[in-house]
Image (cartoon, rainbow, N blue to C red):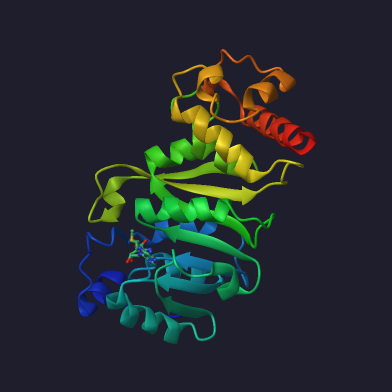
Length: 278
Ligand code: SAM
């Protein structure tokens, strides 16, 4: 196992003060980082895509777990510190400088891979939506282990009938299994963010047959766009949606947050069938 200097020393030596603009909140606690790296299961020999390694705390844990890590980092200041890790783990680690939102992850990896990331909130959500929205299912990624603000994590795993339940929950859960793997206190980060964080773990599930993702999105967007209104009002603008509700026996007087993910799937399926026939 590589003998590495303490992370704080690496940060001081390379002058890596956390940049607010890049949403940088670093983790130093090795035990905590090891626990996060263990969430996807045994990574020995597996390909892992890490987004935003920063000074490389989480990266170290992934490498120690035996993962073959590809990391995308957009802050050039972090590259010399990451180059030291590349030297310590030859052939096991490569860094790509760039914006993860602009790169083709599947092409870069060229094999099935697990994603692990501690990212700024806005980047994390944008990437999540992209990873979940791919046409190929199951996707090339085998799991997503992602740090979010606790509030966002709760929206991802929310069950029907609860306050945080909305588009993000349906979008995630219609063909994936999502769980809250670990809550992380503000004080674990340097500098500490304003709110609690949590790690979410997502694995692809089977894709329900005959459910076009775009129709499901259209329905949930309309329904949750006016979540306090009855479906008969909020779905008015989606052609065929009210007929689809009737076809699957969902009462149009119900409100968006009372419908389960399975019911949204049924409605999208009925809508698709109606469109094909009509
Ligand atoms: N993984 C490190 C840790 O846990 O200590 C750093 C976490 S810090 C919250 C987020 C990192 O993501 C920063 O290093 C930042 O430069 C990087 N980052 C932000 N936006 C990015 C993007 N679009 N593509 C790649 N990296 C990004």
